[in-house]
Image: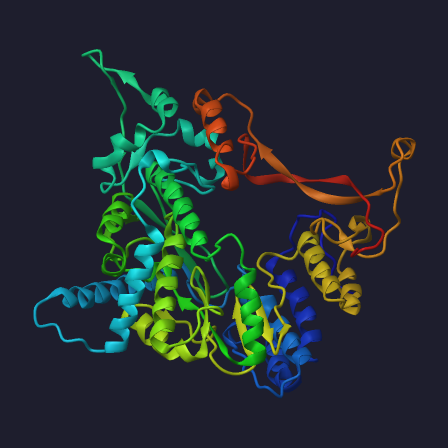
Length: 557
């Protein structure tokens, strides 16, 4: 008899029981994985989870896509399973990776500084030509440095050095202690002039009858968050004033890139091109290791106009604290800086444009989304050399320039067929099994759907159509009508689903004084505006069952 999860939809079972369920599920896929079956079944029989997370598939044109999809799914149950213990200290591994990235940035900084010294000899002329075209393209995209009053500032969703993640909402942030990095200190007065209501909240009258605001000079905090079963990911928690300014700059850079044909609000172009590359073998997909952690200071100085380099430098955080140590960064920005994603996209797009121009191929099939890059195969070799010269490292297990497989932006294509698996990241629960069931349902694998339902207690199983999240199982269901709907002439019906109860804090907070001004400000920003409940913070308080009205006549249509 199979072990069932708890009747509480969100409650996970133990690590041991989770691994037992996942192993059971993985065996079904491993047995149907073709040439990989013996290896995968052997690893599962020995419970060699270290071998499973380290296992790398190869892709041959003669492979059956179904075999590959099963092999990938057998591995995916464990590769990002955060509670899995494979005998490594994930935090130590992540910190060592951070130090390694810093050493890489230092070497790049020293190398690029040599370019401006007398007697410098060009080691690779085509690479220099790529950098030349990249500089010109980036300068054209950026245009003039914007004034502060033209930027749309806002709070991001994450923590700051003076605000914990569990209190990450505008109401808490408006009342938190003001802090900025030493780089921003000289410009903080100009920045605060953009937020009169916020300033008045923190202002105090001194002995000379002047109003003043205390701003603490702080450095970033180096922290680590889960990434996969082998390591954590390093992030830098920024001072609150840096974070607000970076968010405004990031939005501006995103708009400038969009005007140049790079849409960072939509991943579908990268996904479509990756699919095309898996069929035609004419497009390469590139993924970089620790891309944001290897954007060196001198690379930004080299590729961006000086005015922009100076402008961005004013709002970066150049020093981080880890335990009792302070580290001066060799990188320009990291994950946690709210304009890092846009900056890296800008840099990689400039390099892609340069490589395509020098290689003499069209840009019509090139695209970037962060460090996910799609480029014509003819430009791949030159772009790879340029990226290495600029201090980046290709993730060889996720970069493909030949063969039948490509991956980009969360899609994995084998000869035009998406074989992306479902990744289990947390303890197995009714909620995660609902998501797995619906993953199978969307792939029309109804046999696997039935198998997953055997692990779910009958008393929490509810059913409904696709398109409304994973709070219910996608399967045939009995539509319900209400008398009030019929009397009004409504033709639809209702079904039930589970939703998380949001954590909503309504007690009075110091930041409430400035909240009306902030709410009006962010709602006037147009396309980037998102109507959010400022009383909601991260996390959830259990779940509840709700009814949803729909006009759909089937589970998919």
